[in-house]
Length: 135
Image (tube, rainbow, N blue to C red; front, side, top):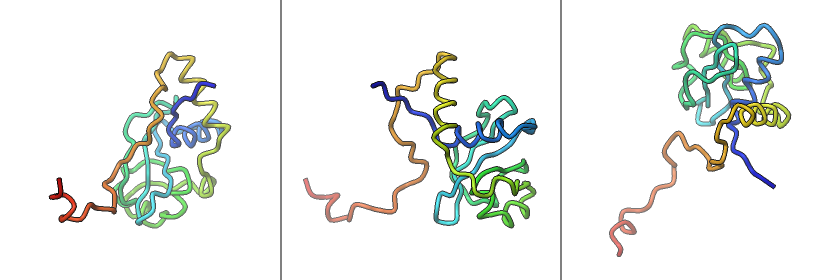
């Protein structure tokens, strides 16, 4: 069975498009823990135009924001000039939208062969200094 890599934020973008009346540009955000959001900006056709990123919600640009990240950090987003969209406050990546995006991307000829995770920040776990010196 072939396996293809599709970013979870794409599923959220598909959900925005499915809801109808997608803005010219919008952001989808999920919870990245540590008081940060995992986010990307999309156009009204669902093409990613910026991202993915991990940052504090207060650092997001002033666009409509969809997804559970918008619900968790609504106040910080509003203070930054972004517009959290309440109808999406419980949205997480949905497998149906993930598959739909994957099929669409494959049909468009995109290479989805890379299934490795994208780590956008350094790990909290560090190799102790004495172990780095051992050879």
